[in-house]
Length: 203
Figure (spheres, rainbow, N blue to C red):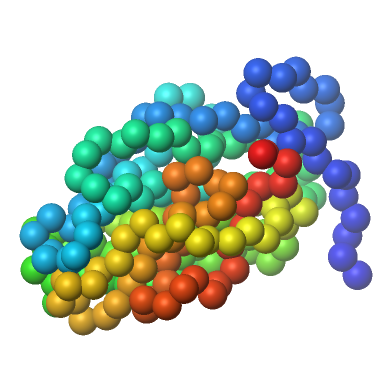
């Protein structure tokens, strides 16, 4: 039987917090460049950025994929847990990483890859990430969220696909409805048919 735990509170960083477990939401417009597809020959452009919170107590939920080669233009949601429940933490690191795609075979200037977090039992991953190179990510501040804090969403907005790149495998990156500047990826050119998640109550 699943252990019952206190229902957490989801609050903005500007709100006050009492003694209950609370997931604090904020945003950041600070990013670190990861990679882009310059030189790949793909029909469209993409640059991948990692949120870089000024306050290092916050964690990230995924990387930001932008459909051009410009600097990052949007804010990404960042989170931290306050008064956490040690028996059922609100946030947990990814258990491992699952490779979605690499640009092997493309003509791109950079080698890069896309990965999905494998969440611990009872948790979900909201966003995927990219890495420069083909090794699994090592992201100390990436977190999965407890499943009762999330709800299923959709990913109808295509950001980029590698069509035209000549890469050995296909991929499409999609924006997640309700999670600004977070993406999911699928290793084909079909409409997204996976499961996407969003934090409850952030709209």
